[in-house]
Length: 138
Image (cartoon, rainbow, N blue to C red):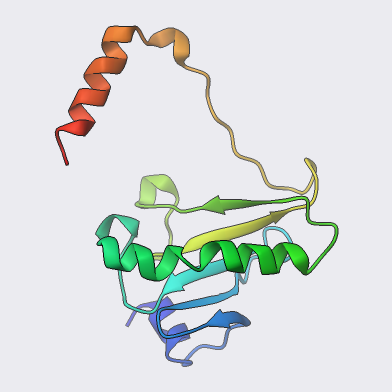
């Protein structure tokens, strides 16, 4: 049985902040920043890539509510990052779908994301080719 499934079944303790029939939200044991929360589907899915529309509705409909509760819990929280990792190369380490809600206190709160600027490497034709290759997958 997967680690998060054991948390859902209360075989492993967690610090739950929200729970219903569809999802469980609990404090991440690492606490990247204070209040770092994981939101997981109770129905086992390896990653977001294995969600169908119903799974997405059942999980994502609660994200804003949980995020607002986290933000309201501490007046020092200035924002929240929503993060989801799919696959090892994307830093997924637990293979039960989960969404990170990471409270942000300042630019010096020990969390960062780097977005490379690669626009100069793309022509309109390259953008069109990339968009077309993705569109054909629907």
